[in-house]
Amino acid sequence: MQRAWASIDLVALQRNLSIAKQAAPQSKLLAVIKADGYGHGLCQVAEALQAADGFGVACLQEAIKLREAGIQKTILLLEGVFSPEELKWVERYKLSMVVHQVQQLEWLEQLADSRDCLISTWLKLDTGMHRLGFSAAQFVEAEARLKSCAAVDGDITVMSHFANADLPTHPANQQQLSLLNALSKTSPKSMANSAALLALPQSHFDWVRPGIMLFGCSPFAEWPAEGCELHPVMTLKARLFEIKSLKKGDAIGYGGGWVSPEDMKVGVVSIGYGDGYPRHAANGTPVWINGYECSLAGRVSMDMICVDLRNYPDAQCGDEAVLWGAGLAIERVAAAAGTIGYELLCGITPRVKLEYLRVSDGQG
Image (cartoon, rainbow, N blue to C red):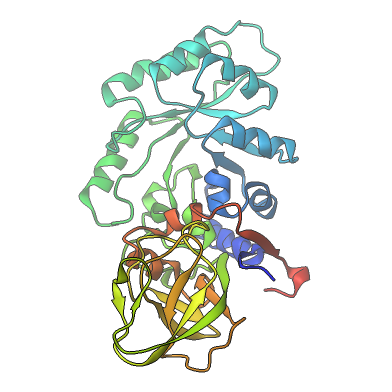
C-alpha cells in the first residue's frame, strides 16, 4: 500500500492545453514544462502535449532528456546556454535558445562560419521585469549582431516577459507591451505567459508560452482555476494510518502549537515535508478525507501530519486523504502555507510515486 502518491491526469492536461489553444487560436503555443514538468514528470507531460507547437525548458539537461525520449518538436532553452561549450549540445540536439546577454552573443559570434545547421534563437528584451534581457538602449545593436551572426538562423523571435500579468489591469502591462511593439516591428514576437494568455489578448502575438495553467493551477492571485475552466492535473494523496482519541487540552506535535478544544479524534496522515507537503502550512489548512473536509492540526512533520477529524468522526485507518487536486484546489493549500501553487507542484519529492491516468485507465 502506497504511503503517499500523486495521480497525474493526462486527460486533464490535454483539456487545459485545448483551453490555452482556444484562447489564442492565431498563435503558436510553446508549452513551458520546466522543473520536471512542474513536478508532473517531464517526458510524460511532453508526450501528452504533442498538440503543442514546442516546449520551453530551463536548462540543457531538460532539453536533452526530451530529445532522447523521442520528442522532435521545437525545444527552447529559456535561459539560453551557460557556457560556450554548451553550444555544441544545442547544435547536436537541434535545440532553440534564448539570447539574453552580451556574453551569449559573443559565444555565438565565435562559432565557425561553416555549420551543418543554423542555431534557432529567440532574443530577449527587458521591458520592465528587470531580470533577464537586453535593455531598450542595448536592444537594437543586439538584434543587429544576432541577425548578422553566421551561425544563427536569421528568423529570430523577439520575446519579453510580464512582471504583473497576474494583475491584468496593472498599468505596467501596457507599458511593457508598448515598449516591445516600439522596438520590434517586423520580427515574430512572444510575450504572453499563462495569465496574459487568458486575460491580455493584445499580448498573444506569434507565440504564447503557457506554463502553470496547463497543470490546472490558476495564474491569478484572486481568480481560482475553476473560474478559468482549468482542470487539476495532479492530485496528491496519502493514507490515514492512525487515529488518536484526545482529551480536551492535549497538545499535538512539535511545539504543542495546537491544543484540543474538546475531547475529540485526531488522524495521522502519511505525508510530510519530506514528501513535499509544505512545512509552513498553518493550522486549519484543508485536507480532504473520503470527501469530508478536515483540517491540519499542529506542526507539519517530515513524514506525517495530524488532522482534526471532528468533521468526519467515522474515519477509519486506511482512508484516502487528498492534500490537493481533484476536490481540493491547490490554491487553498498554497494560501494557507503562505506560498503559491507553483511551489507546491514543483516541490514534490522523489519518494512520492507518480501514477499516470489516461483514457485507457477509465479516466476522463
